[in-house]
Structures are given as structure tokens and as C-alpha cells.
Length: 275
Image (cartoon, rainbow, N blue to C red):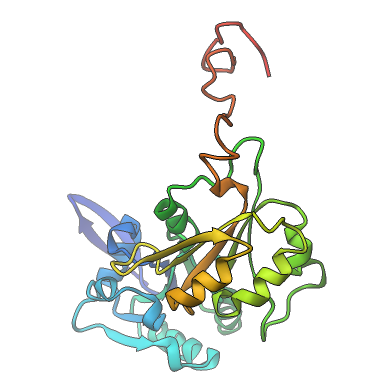
């Protein structure tokens, strides 16, 4: 079933019979995608991720829409609510914090929808990993220091695949962004020290892009104590790697892209130097 709606002078086709997973971004409502904002505002039923979604984002939901906070819901209940909503012809939005594809648990929800024959789509959002980089004024991929970014977590009640333990990942020396691990900061540091030297820079960003955002900087040697003193436990990311040392190890590290002597398909270098 579908209908046609006019948006900004144009007519577009809106499919009702599906679930739309929408990335709510890291917090700041201005970081919602235009499409995500429109879908939230027009939804008839919204299942949202409790305290992880900023209240100002939830205020975009129209007053008459049905709301469900998934914080206290099990997978089966979340799926049932969405499936029943679609069956009733409602526009259903599953609102996930950050980007749904990163620790968003959408795979298991899609499995439930697949089993019920309910279609769905995914609308990406700004991940907290990148909101944290913005807050730090950092580029995770500095030339000659780090060209790889690893998004991962410390093993907890959810086991890690055998080849993805934190010590093994740390051995690459890449930029690591740790989700869901700040409450175990000392254990995380112990694993990271098996791959990084103790002077490796670390930053912890709590509630990136929220008004009460908090940033703690240090090294692997002192970050655990600093985080404890700052009282940071939840909703924070741990970022590790030399890419954070832009004015130190990263000073003078430049890519070839804008080098005046570097030629590429859109510009001839002064010395016509090819890659």
C-alpha cells in the first residue's frame, strides 16, 4: 500500500508497509539527516532507543504517534510492535542512536522482520565515532601515522570472535575507537598496552555532541585514573592512537592530494610528479 504526498512542492511516493530503521545521530538534533528528520516527523509509530536518543529528537515525533521506549523491551516484543504496526498500515520507524550499522543490533531485528515477511529499509545516521572525532578536532587517518580505523569493543558478556580480541587489534597500531567499554577502562587499557606503548595518546568522549559533552585526554599510562576522576562510566567512547597527536607526531604529515608537486586526474603538479 502506498500514498502520494507533497513535500516542498514535489510529489513523492511514500510506502507505508515497511519498517524504517533511522539513525538518530550522536545526539545533536541538527546532525540528523534531512531524510531521517522527515521520516521521524511523519511516523505513526516510533520505537526508540531510550536514553541514547536526545530528547530534542524525540520532540520531532508528532503528538498522536504511538511511542515505545525499547530500553525495557526484549527483541521479540520490539519485533511484535513493529510487525503489528506495519500490519495496521502505519508508518513505522525504529529509531537507533548514532548509525544503525555500528553496534545497532539491527541484524537480529531484521531477522525477525524477514521471518514475518515484513520489508524494511535503513537510513544511515552520523555515528558517535565521528561526532567524537569532530569534538576532538581530530582526523583518524593521518598520513604515515594511521590509515586504518578499527571500531570495536572490549569483550564483556557478549564474547568477541577469537581473532578480534583487543590485544590482537592493538598490535596493528591503528586508530581504535572503543564502544561500550568505558566502564571497564582499566581492563581495556591492560589489553591495549599489549600492542601500544604506554605514551600512546588516548581521549575519552562522553555524550559526543550533547550539551553536556565531556572530554578527557591522556595517555594509556594515565587515562584510566583520569576517567575515574571525571566520573565517566557510560555513553562514552575511548579513542586510541597516534592520530590524536596531530601537533606532535602528526606535525608535518600531509597527504599527496593537495601537494603542489603531485599530479592527478584533475591537476598537474608543478614538477609533474606522478604517484
